[in-house]
Amino acid sequence: MRLIGNLIWFVFGGLVMGLGWYLLGLVMFISILGIPWGRACFMLGNFCLWPFGREIVSRRDVTGKDDIGTGPLGLIGNIIWFLCGGFLLALGHLGSALLCFLTIIGIPFGLQHLKLVGASLAPIGKTVVERG
Image (cartoon, rainbow, N blue to C red; front, side, top):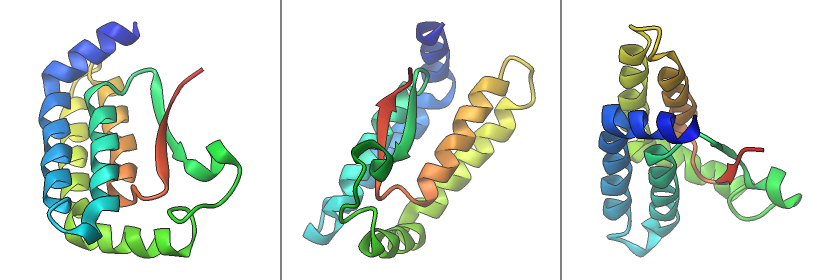
């Protein structure tokens, strides 16, 4: 089921939104200061291409300890991210979710977009893990 869900997702929206993540990641890599945001963009861009069977969690939950992205600097980084581009990605995922919710078959895809809305607003300190 994961493979079928991921293939349908990829064709009907995942590719477009994944490319949006990659494009913003490339823009972030222009400056040295943007590298943490660029890394987060590429990680979430990969998730956006194939989301079924994986989930976004805090790195603190995975490692059991704080790091630079899960502490106060991560909060500041997420605020800067929100102002510099996260809001636009969140709007893209929200619009895609609303379109998916128009049909019963699209509901699981809309739910994935809603998960990505949250990640779009605050990606610093997050990681992608396999579910199960």
